[in-house]
Structures are given as structure tokens and as C-alpha cells.
Length: 102
Image 1 (spheres, rainbow, N blue to C red):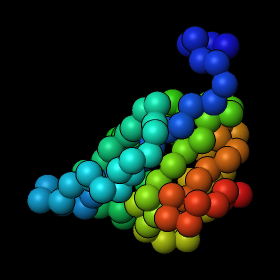
Image 2 (spheres, helix red, strand yellow; image 1 turned 45 degrees about the vertical axis):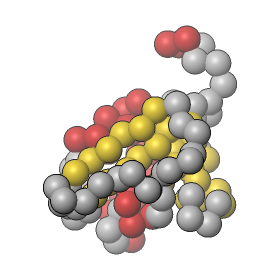
Image 3 (cartoon, rainbow, N blue to C red; image 1 turned 135 degrees about the vertical axis):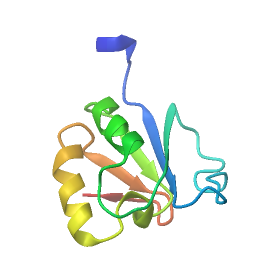
Image 4 (cartoon, one colour; image 1 turned 90 degrees about the vertical axis):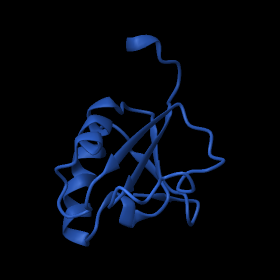
């Protein structure tokens, strides 16, 4: 596979809104191959590490987030992100509910 990947990777995305918050508990105890972290408002989808994660994930990878509000603040933003991520990562997991998100 390109880049030496064998099988899919488990990729985490964490986000906090302010400098006095931390991401330590968001994916604590979850085995991940790579984590992308933004320290930015959830407003909009123009976040550097979110964009880097979307460019990084490939077919077979699983993106994990603590909860959907860490990924997108509202349904419109989520609808914008899912078509972008879907070709690369058809199975995304919501850590809070431990279910696959279509």
C-alpha cells in the first residue's frame, strides 16, 4: 500500500475552543495511529488540523472523535465534512456512542 500502510489506520481528531482547555480526556484510552488536534472555535470547517486530517485519511481508515460536536458545530458543517471525508474514510466512529456513522 502507498506510504507503507497495511490495513486501515485509526485516526483521531480532537478540538478545544480556547487556550485554557485541553484535549486530554477526549480520546483518552483509545488506541490511535495518529491524532490531529485543533485549538480553534468549532465555527466553520476552516481548521488547519481538520484539513490536514482530511488530507491524511485514506480508504480503510477510521476517524474517531469524542463526540460529533468536536468535528462540527452544526448539521450544515457536518454535511459539508461528510462528503469530503467519505471517499477517504467510509467508516467514522463516534467514541461517545461507539457506533459507526454513515
